Length: 278
Image: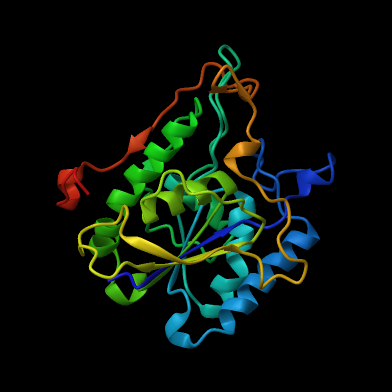
């Protein structure tokens, strides 16, 4: 049984302060952390190490982007726990501008192990976002779909002690969508800073087979564990909207003829023995 869910945003990105950066993975739009961002990741780690052992994360699920895996690494090493890569909690890209190609997607989990030995490649991702981007509603639908299959997948794939306390390390928009999904409030307001931390506990009386709407916030996007406090806060009110729609972003040059696959849930609901009402 999952006792707690922690959700953290990645640390401060290098491309926010410099144009002279190179992606370690070679993937476009996949910057590493700044030195300050690495300090934030270490402070997040030290904060968790100050917890009693029975409160610490037992597994980390990370977005496949380098900055999230960098943020995950200090705690994974300190606690000796695995990092599982999950595209269902990956970055949100707004709809791609027609004719400009597709948004980037990180490579296979095995390729990320070369940079992060703490990654456990046995986890097969549950959900792949479309490389054509998503509207805000589509992002929420993606996260809801991921949340519905996440718990039964944990029960089928991992020993119970491994998923007792889960840490998800992701991005600002995805953090908001995840919290809204788990809490069951699509309108919940929050601004997410770098390495901010949310803690969720199961609602008393929530059905054991339910994930969406079954959690209550203990703390929301807190930066109290960070020496510099929260930084680079972001919320959905910061997106650029034109005529009621999110402004489109260009794709990656050269990707115009690449296939947008795979997309969506990689398992049928029946495989996980759950129903669509959850």
